[in-house]
Length: 188
Image (tube, rainbow, N blue to C red; front, side, top):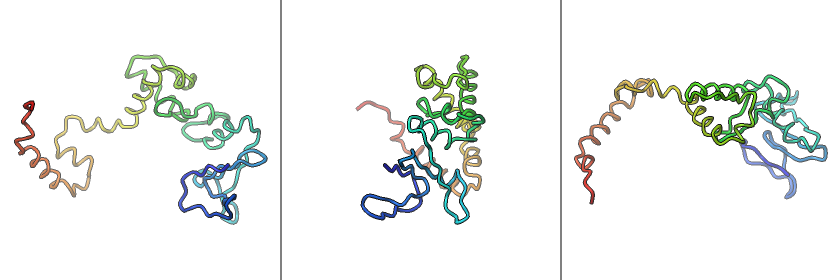
């Protein structure tokens, strides 16, 4: 079984039953699963990505998450990759993200969540799933708030620092607001 992850070129087919193992592929082997990641792992002396074999078939999923997410997204301890795997509507992943989203939800909604110590709440509790999604979104897109109360020109300077399309944007705005049909709200 081969589950190719996104890669740069088309997979080369050796024969109809076998594929070359490309970086980013997960392949089931007799020993377990084998995985190679281009961004996360080192290359050997020949320039090929080092391949990792995950044994213990009953724990393959857990071992895979621990391998892939080791030392990422605030994961600092052995087993954090599995413990802080994606959960909730937004699929919050990583110890730091669980803490950040928990803190944001608590401050916004006057709650007392501790998803860093109770990550399964994002899988099991509907209110936690909803609040975590809102908190994640507001954490991720907080810079939008710097645009509140700004004029079109001020927003343009923030969004498009070069301002190379500002006049075209202003023309489109004027064209839209000059259209009398825009303000015709009568029911037909």
